[in-house]
Figure 1 (tube, rainbow, N blue to C red):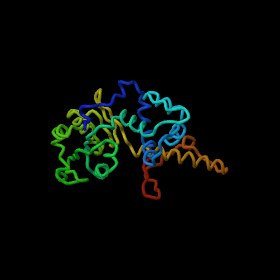
Figure 2 (cartoon, rainbow, N blue to C red; figure 1 turned 60 degrees about the vertical axis):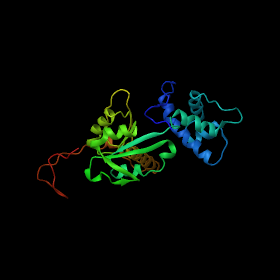
Figure 3 (tube, rainbow, N blue to C red; figure 1 turned 180 degrees about the vertical axis):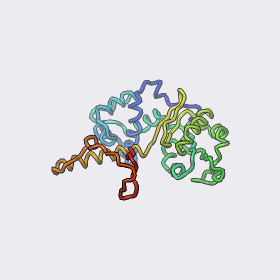
Figure 4 (cartoon, rainbow, N blue to C red; figure 1 turned 90 degrees about the horizontal axis):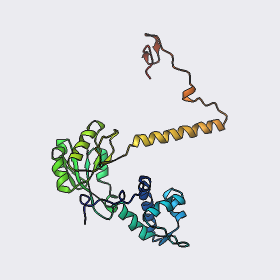
Length: 259
């Protein structure tokens, strides 16, 4: 089977917009579920609903793939699974290295869904000497001192960073220097990479903060509907400075409350 080091998907050269590329995995997930239920064909409306997009956008996206479906019949599910998998480069083997084998790194290593989607965890790397040789998900953890050799020996072109934020940029630089051209970053920091290296960031705290915003907004709307007073943070009176030495419920309070 071909490896990710020698073959790269042709999406960019074919001029497929990045927004369309970002939606292809959504279509593939929905189509895979249909395939597992032995559904032979699907309409654009049904597939769009399953993927969470509108049908006009779906048809436009598929036009970039040269797939237009059949009027009155819809799209052939198995053919679309193959077509999108090929476009995403999932018909070949992609060796992946995970750097930082803490709780998150170990959880990713143990995730069984990678293999069925064209990815193979080829190496686990950690800076802790005590971790060296420790088996995680049946793979022995190797030390970061050997990172260059590990990347080369396993033909890795995709690196996953699950280190603390302070170590992420150094790890990123070493991965790039070793030949890694795509990085999935779980560390809560922004990475700087040279031209030609792709980075995708997964920040769970940001996603939770966005959900908190929506929860706060919904709570405000419910309160307004009930006729309760709702105070916007921007309309709240400013906090006053508290004289030094004044006692609060937790003891001495500073002269100026921190922001």
